[in-house]
Image 1 (spheres, helix red, strand yellow):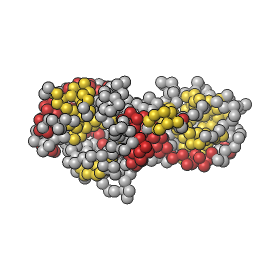
Image 2 (spheres, helix red, strand yellow; image 1 turned 30 degrees about the vertical axis):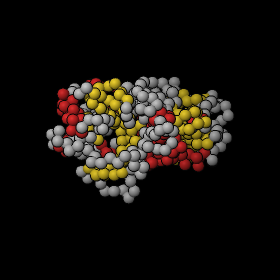
Image 3 (cartoon, helix red, strand yellow; image 1 turned 120 degrees about the vertical axis):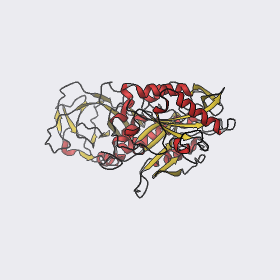
Image 4 (spheres, one colour; image 1 turned 120 degrees about the horizontal axis):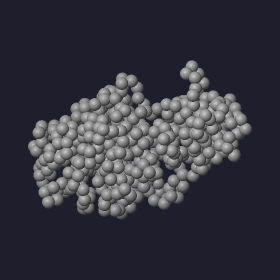
Length: 464
């Protein structure tokens, strides 16, 4: 079986087949490189360890002998699903994804293990939020009303979402007995706005996560019953009286830099009327799009203080048969716009979609059957994960080409290997998902977070 190994960590990796061959020889794979090999028939696992290579070594790929310690990662070579994560020890410094290029050609992508609860702490203050990839949840609090209104699993409450790397929250509210409560469609979601604010405040004031920031989109769900000014006034008053008060919020109508909003919430207001209930009017409602076309298939753009905002929110897909088209449109907007415009760009994309009766949210997000083994329909999340893996591992083309040149004794002679550098791709934007923890126990969010470390050049996008 051919195997392409992609090393997107800062480490040089020592890779050994197991059972070991007669010489106990493995190979070093340098950072941002990939290697195509042909595995011996007896090999059923790979052992990985960080390798020590002399600083003046020019070789990107060279043999090494033996392991000094227990391997940091033991990877079983039983490839069935199209892609999935490999379960590793908690102290392993990497995340490893395995995937299938063809039936006899597979890929391992090795990424650093980031702390998802505080990954923004590692980003420079000078970055505008438009230059970040922020994972988000569509209808963040929609835990009830399956299969029509539920968009997130009850097993992933807001606290879990925040510690799992979710940084854009999409909260839909309605007025019940004079107070705001989370709602989706006709289904109450049982959580008050004050409870939501309390959870957010606790997260942003806890020492390990006090340098994070959140974007909170607020949308009125009962606009047919509650007058717009009343809803807007209630949001204002509950924020001002809530935990953290006004100081917890960034309410200017512009894209801030990360250093301005650490420990704070950036409002994205999809309500507000004329803004008369807010200090500063429409300029005091946070990021405030003046129009949001309903389910515009090709997306729409708007400008915000010199930033072009590209938005994809086509949710009313005709049926699950349109999932591939939905994924194509939702992912392409995360790539740089054509012609490299000389002004900042913010991409906002919703991976969520739903329609009655052939595209309920759980079906669209998760698919049905066993799609990763070729039986059933693969959902949006699985397809997005595959797309991200492809981009983060160089598209797979170099690995596929190299694999064709492998030798059956490829573990015995580095002259018969082909190693290539892996180019970084620039993916940017805010990406909101239904059932974000699917598939594979939250496998997509770490891929989105990893995009923040890729395609960076000093002096561009505010990168220092």
